[in-house]
Image (cartoon, rainbow, N blue to C red; front, side, top):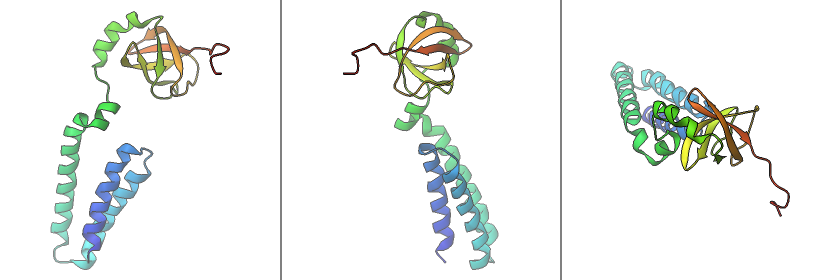
Length: 158
């Protein structure tokens, strides 16, 4: 009889973990667990199942709404969300041409780079630049800078 609340709470936890370990698997499993708790509520509590399901839907909606409204203030939210609006970045992109920086995420071909101490959307000149690579800004397009990977100089690795 404890399967209904256990599956429901476990499903919510898996959906929240999806943010930290993206890929769709945990979120899908969490949604499946919540759906399974709704189905099992008909088996264990047939007279109360519509109320249980309605409560689960309302509670899930409330929790997700509250989480979306507060996520940007959390430590993880601040890491995942750009600090500035894209219109501000777009108007200032010209000043980064020629500057060097480092990739914070892999550029496939678009990601985030830290240029002059700021997190900026960046696009690789080629197809891919790995995380933590030195890059140089060679231009800008739309709302992102265009970067190329800098070649390592001999003697730099050892």
